[in-house]
Length: 280
Image (tube, rainbow, N blue to C red; front, side, top):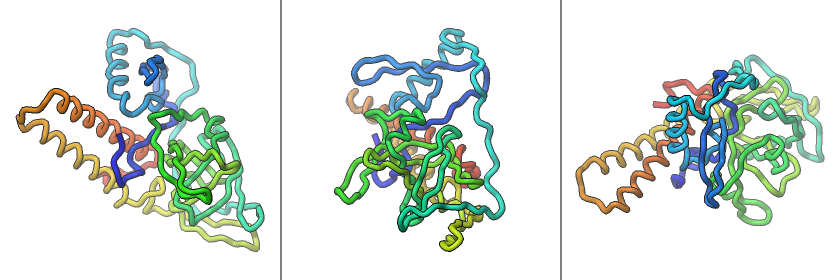
C-alpha cells in the first residue's frame, strides 16, 4: 500500500544485483495466483511480501538449508561520482536532442533529452531487455500524456551513464507507448548544465547539493515522513487499547509495509551515495 503525496518513496522494483559474498540467500514468495517464486535478489520480491521472505531466508541461512555457493559475477563496484566538467555530444532528431544512454552496465539505448521533464522514462522493450520485474505489486504513477492520463509502472535503475556523466539510483517510469527513452530532470538535476546548440554539446558540472536527483532537504523529508508514520503507528499499537483482531492485523500489515518502504528508501539512498546526515 502506498503513501499519498510521496510518489518517490515506495519503490516497486529495484534491479541491483547483490552478490557481496560467494554464498547467496534464496528468498521465496507466493503471488496472488498461488505460484511460488524463488530469487537471490530481495528487490525482486514484492514490497509487502519482503519481510516474510527475509525472515524465511534468515532461517534457511541459520540451518544451512537452501543456500549455495556460486561463481557468479561479483556485485557491481561502487563508482565515484562524476567529477570535473563533462562534455556530452548529442545528435539532432528534428528539434530535439538525442543521446546514447547506458543503463545498469547492460543496455545502451537512444534517449531524447528533455531537461523540462520531471524524470526519466524508458520503453517497455528496454525494461524487458534489462530484466526488470514488473508485476501487480509494482508501484505506479499517473502520467499526463497527449492521450490523457495513463498509469505507468515505476522501476529503479542502478546506474545511468551518458558519456562520462553517471548517476546511480534513479527511478524511471516504464512507458508502453514510447519507442525511445526520455532523459529528464532527475538525471540533469545532479548537474549544472549548459547546451551549446551550435556545437551540439551539453556541458555538465556535477552538482554536489543533489544525489539521485533529489536535494538534501528532499531526502530528509522522505525519511522524516516515513519515520513519523512508523512512530505514530508504534505508539498506537503500544497504548494497550483493546482492538479487534482484524484491526490489529491490519495495523501490523501496515507496519510491515512501512518498514519495507524504509528499507527500499535506504537502498535507493545507498545507490545514490546519499550522505548519512541527509537521511536524518
